[in-house]
Length: 520
Image (cartoon, rainbow, N blue to C red; front, side, top):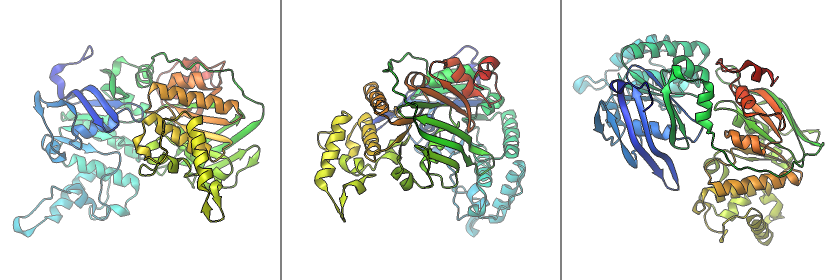
């Protein structure tokens, strides 16, 4: 507990909570304090454990170790109903609504207002829902089907649903992600009203300007551990960033650069419109030369992963142009861009990079089967030879390629994803958080592979949340914030202060002006 914490104000305490899933430890001895009548901000990069911690508090998951204490009394939740009975409500990031039911039916789902033997009192539910929606300054008809609402209106219904529970502890997980600027202001007024009523709010957002504006306390999670808990007024954005990304020295010594003058890739004015207005990726232009490793750094919500998805053709409504070896790429779908020489290693290897029920070999050749096909048959011998070659080349621990890929460690699974990309014969490799969730030894292997591929003339664009990694591995560093490119540094000119300042640009929070100006 840090200086300045008043024990009497703590309504909820998470003590020594650990959560273990098969093959991974999501939370490691977490202590988390939630204060009454305050906005308790929780931040951390993707995969830090925020969602797991919230699911435990909301009764969705049970901790492997540790306990939950409410008002000084230990509690155990068998499910979400237990959490609700203890005064805990949650606004989920992923909307938890029934599209085939009305707004009022969603607000009172699982706790319907009844009239004895006459069943559900729909009129009363609609009356109370209308009151809640007026409180949120929306005139949505309670009888409207949720499926007929815009995404921002659905988010308002999700918030109304939580307010209807009269929770004393309200979890808001990215509540403004689908809201317009006007709707955000309304939500903040409601939050101020709830605070005045003594409600404890746990607020998760990647938008730093929101956190600084409405937060009273801030807790930072990194790799399943709490790295800081302070009053918001005592810290600045630099503190938040440091706690999120860590400052431990890492050894990423790299070989001499092999960058050529030849441009291998160029992107011009890449844009991804946001449904609620504005852009997730806002007119980003960049280029990569043969043999160059371009690192893209930024905080959550900066638009880094979305940019790679646009480049790969995963968003068909994205705008802008890309060029490979000076030739414009007309294909706008993933298959077409793979054929033109692009390959993506996604951030979430479990869901997007691998098919868990398939073998190691089948996963490796999944994107390149066409190259092993003769007429209508797959040349099994050539396929096996290619699989063995990449197993050796990437130093995989895979004695039996026919075993399910789920049997491998996280680091070796990542190597399978890399092999799958390389087997398509790319000219440009896009890597989204290539070291996330793997151990130190596997990280070193992945970094050596990146350097070797660059030395062979491949252009590499990689996204990372780790400041040490981007500083050590990159020939140039591009920094993104709020969907925009806010800094581009040659390796020799980059400093941690410049990169961090550029990552905070556009958030409306204090930062050294001289550092920001140096990125222009």
